[in-house]
Length: 160
Image (tube, rainbow, N blue to C red; front, side, top):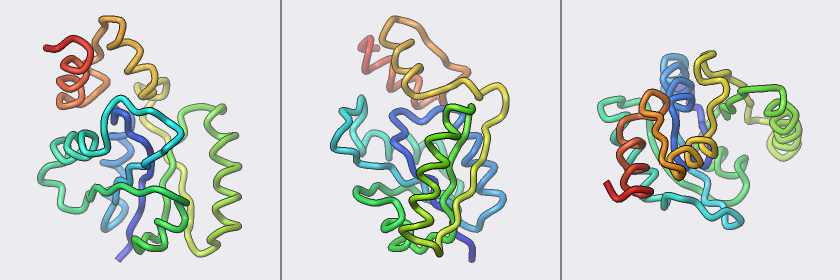
């Protein structure tokens, strides 16, 4: 059985993330969405809120699992039994950072492979940071975030 780990903050998850997850779930037997608990960042949504949104989005998809972790990604990958770490790339700017991280992760854990996946072109500009900024300023992106995320963002920023 081949298991892939798709780590990130997912604060919030976007349709770009969903696109990569759905495609990865057709390649791997199991894809685990691993939400990073990053003490240096102040997230908009709690880990529990993010887990619940992702569970709602992927209800019925038996080979997509959701978890959270802190610490080194490669340590968690080994602990969870993942063969592969999936990382998303949108642009050249992502590549430089992700390339450095991949090389460091290879150094720390040579047995875990890293695969880069690009989202479909319609999501290539999309980031959680931009989504939060648009909603905080009164905008909405219902075609770029899953419906549970749109609802949660509207409630968080506008009480509705």
